[in-house]
Length: 410
Image 1 (spheres, rainbow, N blue to C red):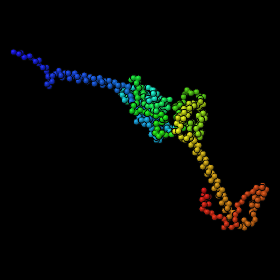
Image 2 (cartoon, helix red, strand yellow):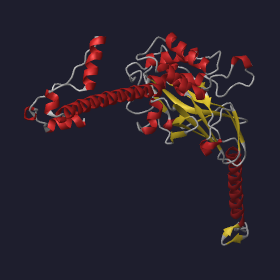
Image 3 (cartoon, rainbow, N blue to C red):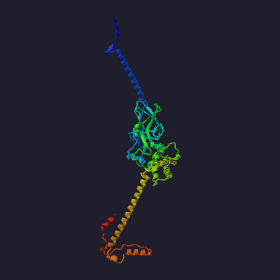
Image 4 (spheres, rainbow, N blue to C red):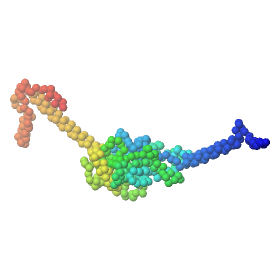
């Protein structure tokens, strides 16, 4: 006889599911939640830490006047009235580097510049010359500080002179183009800087000289003024020696250069233009003007832009004023000539009328006493005077036509 084996009694159940299964499920869910919390803490550390966004925009800046930017991040500028301020020598074509702090803690950024690829060098970045605009430009206000503290949800901008470095990047290489991206360092994050997005990179081909579409032609004044402007100080140095006089600053560069260039009809030698600029600067009080370096780089730029330049005198204010003065003097001279001619014609007509109203018996008879005295004086002095001969018969006088009347009016 077979003895039955007793089966172990099953544990407690909940909703017909063993409690042990419920415990395992709760433990697994707790583990998942813990992993999610850990992941969120890690993400929050990076999101709230030194995190910035970087954008690179094309811009044209007229000092102390306006700033025009293309905010889509693409390399290009429409050829409109604003672009002509750069081609005519009123504005500078620059790159606007925008840095934003989307986090909830302050962050410090430093070393704003441009990251360069495509020319055979790795990890190559340059911080070119920068310009400040002042507080009047609002959220587009730019600074020349190399280290900036950004509060949460704040931003700052830098205006970079990238065209001063682009020609030298190609050098003796055989590359057809280079790629530029904006870059800035973030303090406390890592040695890896933050850059603008790859899909918004700038691709600049060899031989490019502007981001303006067309491409347009530049006035020689615009090329020289740009190089001279960036070399001169923004304001007078208070530590400058008093006997040196006030320094030639950026604000005076345009007037001095315009006046010097207006002395020449064609492009002179660099030394001749430098002598003219220094002479005008000394007349304004600067005994030691420093313009040679700017003009040297300016003439190099004129050589690179050969074939894309307008005539030498195009856009020169002092030359236009001189031409206007010459035209005004010529018009006044022509008016004086016409007035004298009209006076002479009127005098001749008056002589004809006077001769015509003299009685025939007097014109055919003896001379008057005044006429005898005049003739006696002529015989003594040997002078002569031509007198208009009048016909005896008024019917022989030529007819006064409409053309004569029009000529007299003119």
